[in-house]
Image (cartoon, rainbow, N blue to C red; front, side, top):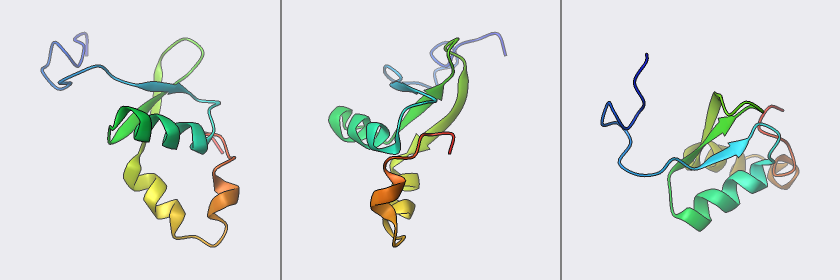
Length: 76
């Protein structure tokens, strides 16, 4: 647990992160803008608290209130 993802050869490039207070729209924008499959969600101290993937957002897109979900934060 003392090694980084790069030291373990599990991260081929830079990790894109968003604040845990970011909206799902912010996550979608980052995923599309960087052409990546997901983002890391970090707290105020930069500690990983979760992830949001394109697949997660795809599931939301199939709900009737999808547009409302886009304004939720990653912790809602």
